[in-house]
Length: 224
Picture (cartoon, rainbow, N blue to C red):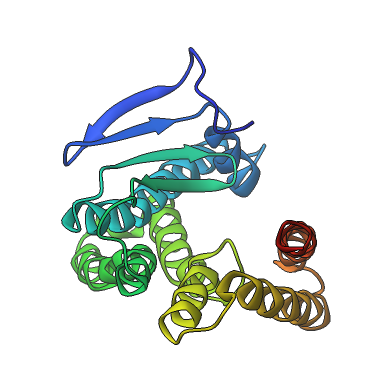
C-alpha cells in the first residue's frame, strides 16, 4: 500500500504529532506542477502542496489530540491521512468536529494569505514570477481543495461529517446511508465536472464513486 512505511520516508514531529512523508507524496507535487520548461515552478508547487496538506491534516490531528486521542499524520500520493485512536470517549459530535477541523484549518490560512499579498504588493519582491506563482498555488489549494473536501462523498471529510450526522440523528445504519449518498453525489459531481469543465476533477469523483459502490456492496454482504 502507498501508506506503508519505507526506508525512504521523511519523519518529523510538528506540535509533538508524528508526521511521516511517504516517498509517493512527492509525486503529487510533480503531477500537479510539472513544467518541463520551468522546473522551478514544479518545486514551488510541491512546497505549496506540502505546506497546505500538512496544515489540513494538523487541523484534524490537533483537534483529535484535544479530545485525548493520540494522532499521527501520513502524507502520501493521494494527499494526507490523520490517524487517531478513537477507542475511548468517542461520540459522533467529536468525530464531526475532527472532520471539520481539516478544511477549517486551510480556510484560516486565507486571511494570512490576503495580508501577505497586500504586503508583497508594496514591494518589488511581489512582482517576481516565482512569488506570484507561489501565491497562486496557495490560494487555489486552500480554497478549492477544502471546498471539494467538504462534498458529502466518502472518504472525504464531507462524507465523514455526513456519516457522523446520520449517527447523531439515530439512523440504524449510518455508514450504509452515507455510502448511498456518496454514490449519488459522486456520480452527479463526476457528470457536472465533465459537462462544465470537460474533465477537471471528474475522474477523481468517478474513482471515489466506484470505490463507494464496492464499499457499499461489501458492507451489505457483511450485514447479511
